[in-house]
Image (cartoon, rainbow, N blue to C red; front, side, top):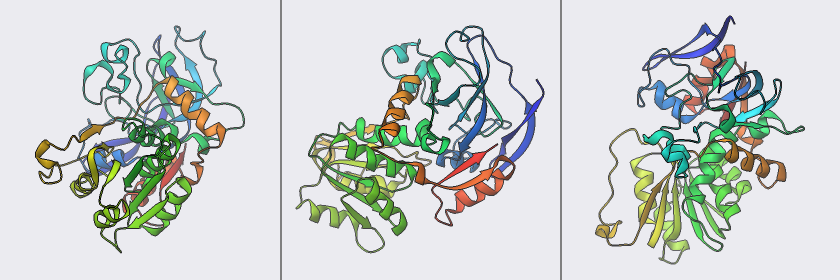
Length: 352
């Protein structure tokens, strides 16, 4: 079928746009022509060598596109030319963990359902081969733009999971440490789940302004005040029901522990690249009835359908999180911008 442009991981600190063969479609696969994708913080971990992938792998796991070709087993389910969103996590729907309703952990290994840009070629390319297509392609309705749904494959799904898996209840108090794209989505998810006191913490004032739009009741700039002390003051010394960690550092993890009420839940969304330790004092030596939960981005067709419903309802508008746009030919420049976090960048739309 010829070749395509694709961003390839060469080695720690080095990526390169190369020509690669367009993938061949198997019976249960679909070939999607990418119309929009983006760069994730996890891609930066890969580039830095903090998360290991094989050299030569195409990076990226947030695809929006058009069905170009279908395998024989899925021709009756979809049509060529349909616009689709594909989750960053692509469960098979048939293994033990999928049937146990743990689709993110498909086939029973850590991050097993995360394949794009991890174990198989990803979406920062002109074409993407989608495995288990029946379980993973979701049609995008007419009138919905790529930018409106660009957060669905990963950022929106992950951020919402931070609130969902923490079992946020109506009337709960929630703090979200770090208001990057995932943290902002966690803030929005806490609002949708019914939290009535939502505190957003970050050091960039522009992100705190957006956090207010996403549902935060109170914002804290850690450059101006100690967030732990301020949160304990706001909660009259009781602490919060749920603390969501959305950055992946020892410092933010500890801060989450220190603001939890007895019996509270720490919901961890960050990807930790080094040793992580639990401070014994805030953990009450293990006797505080605390819960620590982790979440890998929920994926699959049904998850995407639900997120599209949220987008169409207008209850959450995430398209303004897309702050920059680059062509695929310019993707190395886009990586430089995203890594430096300059010019107010949140998410970058990459257009092949």
